[in-house]
Length: 197
Image 1 (cartoon, rainbow, N blue to C red):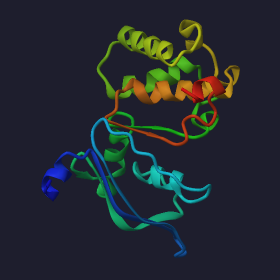
Image 2: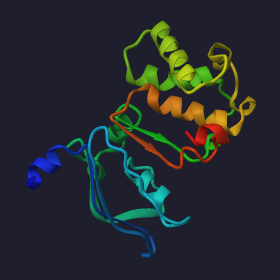
Image 3: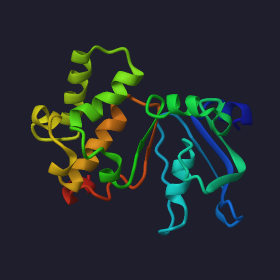
Image 4: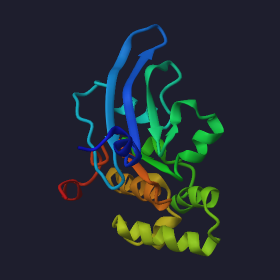
């Protein structure tokens, strides 16, 4: 039988009794708990409006301002996330925890070419040269099956279908090779042939 200390040390993320509520007091997410080990895939299942997205966003401090945590803890890699400063949270997002949001068009900047958007995180969180960053971006775009990755770099989000934009968001999240990847319904906008894989 595994003891509690061994279990905790082998977990990448531990969410314990997480409760989220509106500022007025109405509870929206009540007491959810789960652990995720490195390399493990965990799915949160529930009906529409049950708080899945809210819970996912709260893991990296991105819950809406009107929502507050009334109970529970979120421990990532041994560190309590709920007590981190805004600056520490920004460093954690992307570099250590990646997130793919449900609607890619609201996550991608419509006035910025895809290549520049994908480069931002790498420039901020790594010491890679521009040439190495470009090579990694092209490799990742190929991996998510974007046709003609070189041309995609100078293309704007509205030129891509919803499924292609979703794949670009997946590429963006995976570029920094985060230890934890949170995906909020990542196959919703994907082409049917890719969703089924």
